[in-house]
Image (cartoon, rainbow, N blue to C red; front, side):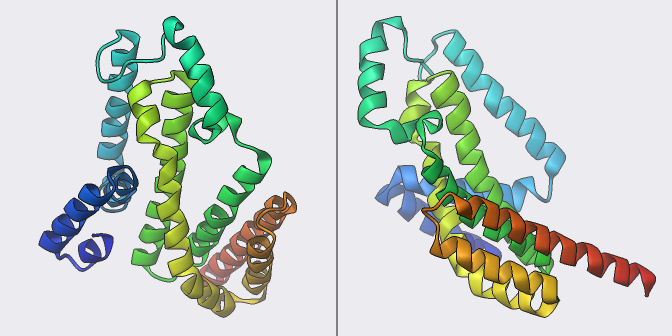
Amino acid sequence: AISATLWRRYGWAAACMLGALLLHPLMATAGIAMLAFTFVAIPRPRLALGCGALGLAIPLLASAGDIAPFVSFGSADKQWLEIVRSSSPFLFVSLWSVSDWVRVAVPLATLTVGLLTATTAPLRRFCTGAILTGIGGLVLTAIYCDAFKVIFITELQPWRWLWLMDVATLLLLPLIVRNCWQAGSTARAAIILLLSAWLFRDDTVAIVTVLLAIMCARSEEHTSELQSHHD
């Protein structure tokens, strides 16, 4: 569906997204989110901010008023909530381990490097859309699942949107490596750091590695901007 949208084949995009929703609705919402971020939010940031604020406020107000489907775990559900938290801690980002966050940070940093070294507007938009999809899922989980414990959104598991961010990262990785290699020596160092982070993705040291990779890519971008200004 995303590929068809990129090629402006909107009929095929709708058909593919419908098929994805019929196959696995929870996982398919990531595709809807990425389409919304990439092709609506980025070109129209003011509209996106307004809709986003409204979209966040309505479920919160509904949960405060105990209005379906945005009903929260109540005091009577305390025992049930504890069972859910103990048996499925992945539903709540506050229960994630450092290792879990490292595994999120590596593809997120890779896309950030891709954004900083992108040479075309479509690539920048695609990287940004994938980043927003992953972060958006985490933010929704933190707000509605961890903080307000809204049952309906906890069942939707928006943190699962990370899968599409991971897939986008792997698809774009060869292009990101090529752009870094062509950008200059500092950006080439970012390649080595990113590859190291992917190899040691389960180690907390990968956090430092990806931060250094982003710094190298940012430094190369800043150098290129100065050189262009000087020319």
